[in-house]
Image (tube, rainbow, N blue to C red; front, side):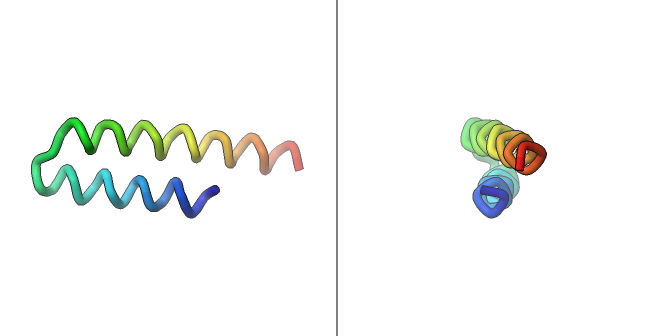
Length: 45
């Protein structure tokens, strides 16, 4: 799960470099959600 969050963060950074603002914002949102889900599952376990 953490790996997917990092992958979406990298996609967001690459999209921001090339000027795709909408794609970057979407990828950052997905990365944040996956990171917090990972964090909650980690704390539960």
